[in-house]
Length: 410
Image (cartoon, rainbow, N blue to C red):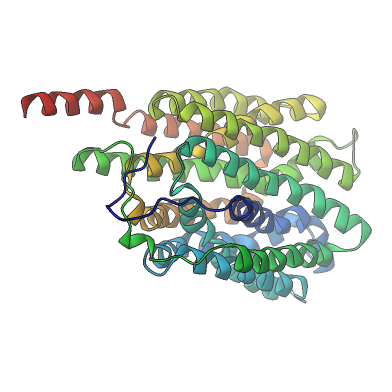
């Protein structure tokens, strides 16, 4: 794809080290949000809660703000500047995570996590549009970025397990905070100033949909993102305790379980690179439907599995859950002009992440009352709803045929 620009606007891609920091930002975003879930069992003991499920709802504020904050963050990214917003992201994430490490009660921790969610909301509507704004292969770029984000998920499971074992749960927050501050300083030094905010630039979308089809595509994108984020939040926040429960009597070392879960996320994240490459070559709709369709039997298999069978089933399942993530980001790049991408992405994330934050609040009480088996049955039902939603996407081949027909008539 060759981006289309207004006359006189220079086409200059970001330096490679800035792209690396933007990908690192995605890793930080997901890693920091999952430290609490990875350490919740130990934190519950420290704060004198009988069960981890009772403490889990205190993390919901982070995910609510993660969604609600995306709308103003996207607007500021387009109108004020993406570079400035990314600096707020890096330094804000470091500060809020240090506050979490210093918390002395569940409510103090909840407040720090909620503040972290507000800063975390900046990345997706700002960092991803900044990364792909001049990309000639946006699918691959988003796939690699998705890999980085989910490596953050893997590192959260791995690093938290070892830091909790060697030190305590507070170190699991404090050590990553230093990383975020370092990235912020490097971004300040390396990222060039923007000559104008994105709202004043014109980089056309690859596929120019008619207004009614664009509205339908954005609606489908938002609905699919809601259901996809529900699956993502249920799994990434619950998989740690799922493995503790289903490996009981087989393997019970928390550091080793954390390493095994990190391996699941690391391998599964590679699926995003493969999917990103495919999205640069093929239409979105058939690929998206295939990914979602395969999720359904896999989720049902996890619901009844234990031990190493569970591990194998969970690994494949997470490949398809993670592999479905790039689709909505690629849809924004393919269908929406760059000057409003942060605002469109912000709206989509506000709706989808705001609703899916309920998964974090409901996870502990649902598992406590119904168990992990029914949780994964519920997720299979959600995947069925996603499949029906994606079926409503407009066909890009049909749009192309309509454009050719209109051009011949004119």
